[in-house]
Length: 441
Image (tube, one colour):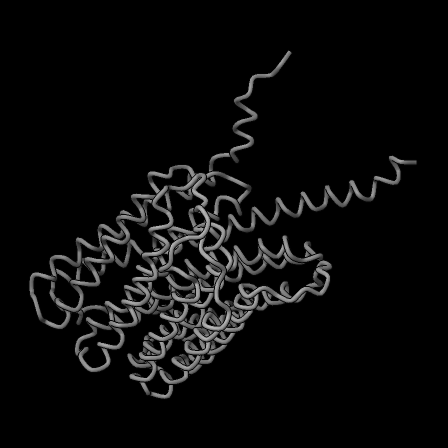
């Protein structure tokens, strides 16, 4: 009787284990496709283009459509894939109905990967771009819809407790992600109907890039930082009021940007960065020891330095409004945000959490983690300093620094991808330990 009574519980445990394994495979799929978009359409071809324009000492040869496709691969192909992969994996931990999340996750991964690929292909080759661009935007929105459907699945019982600040922030970021994809679809349909090329007009492109960065990536990083920085770095819990005020300033900045009030937008972005940095206690001493198991001891330093890049990006954005003439200051601001803050945070936090999400693995090399972070920030420093000097014509020798910065960043990206890839290829640490333990006869 006891064995029969335990059968439903055993079946439930077996089912949960099976779903967990499926969710780990799904997370790995999103991470692998994200690494692909980061390396090939993103970094490798970006470095090649930067070297070419550095030789010519002009950005005139840089096709806008190519540049926009490159940015799409970096923002949505790389970081977007990571966000969705982590999101689907987290659903299996927080929801009662797990099987739907896994099935929807695989469908979402397929649609998302095809959508990003079509967008890049149409922008770079201009092959049937009037079809591929709106189709890609519709497919990406459909992929995100499946993610949203998973969020609406029934919760496990939690006693009616209020949502934590970080979880409310994640929900805000999710709505922002949806809004950006809807705007992207509308823009691509309009471009396909009335445009002469797959390239958006310069001003609209700047607005769309800012919308993607500040409407999706930056708020999402704030949200997960509110959850992870107190745990991994030992910082105090976020201060709720200034933390959510930062989201309010982001919304204000984006509205002002699309209204044509660039100065107001730039100031609001800076206030958002300062409020978030203060609310997350990034510049204050830790109250608990940092958790450095299986990561390099420099991990807390590199997490904190990303917020320097965030503020530097906002300051450069303010300077670009009155002084930018050839895109150099604005480009440096965008690079400080995308590489210094966003990529810097992914390189630091990602190498801390991604192995755990993919079957409780252990990062392959902590030394490689250190060098990828060091080279990334070194390359970013050279790029942010040299780009305004070169593009705006202040110092001709700065053109020689740009390809050097690109090669350094390429090395950093390659080390990061290699470290994650080998981590995923190797079996989890507990299986390796069990295989190496001699049998007792």
